[in-house]
Figure (cartoon, helix red, strand yellow):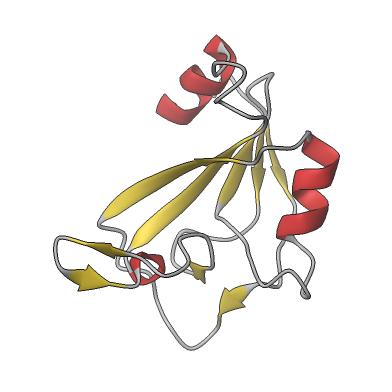
Amino acid sequence: MKYREIKYQTPNISRNKTNEILGVVFHHTGFGLDSSLSWLTDPESEVSAHVIIDKDGTRYILADDKHVTWHAGRSNFNGRENCNDFMLGVEFVGNTIIHRLTNEQIESALE
């Protein structure tokens, strides 16, 4: 494995559900790493993801893939409601509207 993985557990998961893992929803955090980790692991935020990928490609694992995290909000895909129940949430640090993903972020996601 080329890129480091660091466990950084979020409490924001649905404990009585198992993720079906039928796909991936990619997001950007809009913030730097510290703010992103703080927000996605704060119980009061009521949001989370499975992983955050920093600009250097380091992956911060917030939840096991089997857990349902709260990243997609009110959502649907192919007529099915609540993408959180069947999609993994991957967050890229930064604002991709202003700055493109780094090569390391892309490579880490593919890895």
